[in-house]
Image 1 (cartoon, helix red, strand yellow):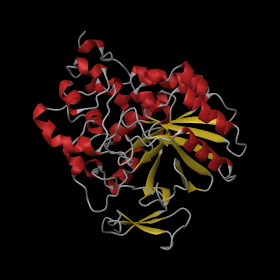
Image 2 (cartoon, rainbow, N blue to C red):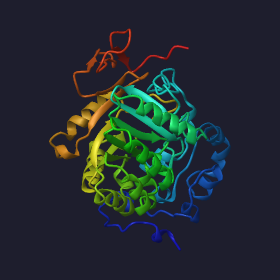
Image 3 (spheres, rainbow, N blue to C red):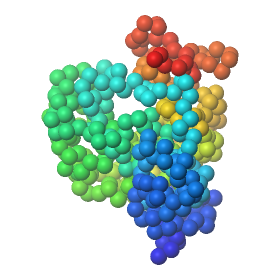
Image 4 (spheres, rainbow, N blue to C red):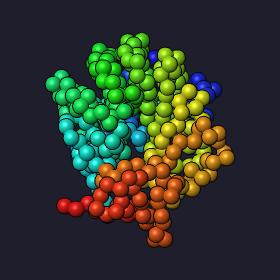
Length: 381
């Protein structure tokens, strides 16, 4: 068995030509999920002399690269490697970065629930992911054993049932689709019994990270409701949309489940108009609607991924007229600290002329009259 057994055909429409054409030596290590420094050395993704220095990164942040993504890595600096292979720069923390950049903890009335907006909540049954992104805004919590017990899930569902304003429940975490079909089905069925919940959304990397998990059992679990069910797929680069990933999306779409995509604007991954055009076109061709393009949150050790806001605005402007409106997501800024999301290319932002912006909350909820400075200042001790 050699590398050619794992690469997609060079004429595959789902891979960028320059990526697909690379002569990559994929080792047998790419047949398993890579979780340790030894795994990455064996797979050829990290040099042996880097291990000692990288131990501190492994100790602080979870690592897992499943086979579907590991075999896409062409070289250490490519867009796939940058997203998932640990990097020493993750230990460089700037003063404005924060362990809870979007205010999950502030808006968590009960374990497993984040309630930032009146009509929707996040339900977080697990903190485990199929793959751990090096830029994740929840990187300080995911990968732990902090998933919900049966009693805690019951309490979280009780909170939802007791709050009539909740119209939409978004399962996230962690990645809810790493749970067994049985557990997912139980949660979906419980939400189906709450009359005021009308929409159930699941955010996941699984369709691109472990597409084989999107099987008949999982789809049956998602269908255990009369509510509207949506799956939001996290995908940042067109190369992630392999034949297998597109087939997983097709299984969901063919089952009548609408698909959305969330992407993060990342330096060295998708920070050109061509990168974004390729990504959004590939998503739409796979029957996935690009929903949000996120400005990177201020999580610790993510500065080497950050694209300046003014560059992001210019990229989004360059895409208008270049791609169909169907392929244009909303460029979104999550106000640091938990004040909510605003479209970055809207009247919610006012440039100050020195590289900073004043951001106005969509609904004023704090004592600063809903005005925030971006980039943010260092959080108070």
